[in-house]
Length: 325
Image (cartoon, rainbow, N blue to C red):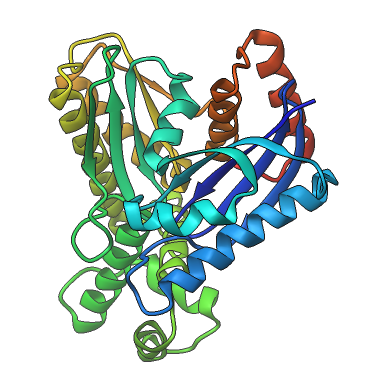
């Protein structure tokens, strides 16, 4: 029996899954963020996240002394430097390395032509044609881009609260929800916390409050999510246009927690997308990104991904309940 590992290195968490050659999920490991390699402490943080996720998945599978045939890593901000950093950590005979957008695309298309939009802590879109042509849009990071991402939504929400406190905008339920969530009595305390000790992941997590407020009819929250949906659609459209796929019947995957906000994001996303690309099919991921990376590793060692293997994977993923799409 041969074994493979798939790794999804994201801005908030790093996930590793270990499969056997039948597609059965044997191990899962979760580590911290694996991004921004050039920040102070970035190298050590990424190494720790990848190593922790790997070790946990191998330990869970009880394969500490078994060879790993192949591993596939999809990393945020993949670069030659990132590859040099991560490859030595992976105990596999063969290692595939690339951007996390690649495994996100594979999670929705299983290698067929199409595109994917990722809207997690950050945002980006990636596409590929049948001829292997590729295009990416976005992915510029929280200071220069990431429109429509959870971090972007949270920053818009914090700004809306500031504007309300100043009398420059209407009242929003987001403020009361924010204070309750952070267990604070005054917005000035929130200001101090944001600027002193909140990480990007902590701030991005506040996007869930915007989704909650929007579901209760808060107009400010609904406007923020509407704008997010339109920005994400623009990422998708520009990627499709670069590949001349905007008028084709191809799948467009939607990956990341922002899309779990439901219709307040999906409705404007779908409307803007289908206005200019009416034939494109919006689809959810078939498997989590880390599992998609493991499937790519299986293909790399010559395993055919037939219906039986994919059913085995889906069943074992449901039984584990630990990896989100």
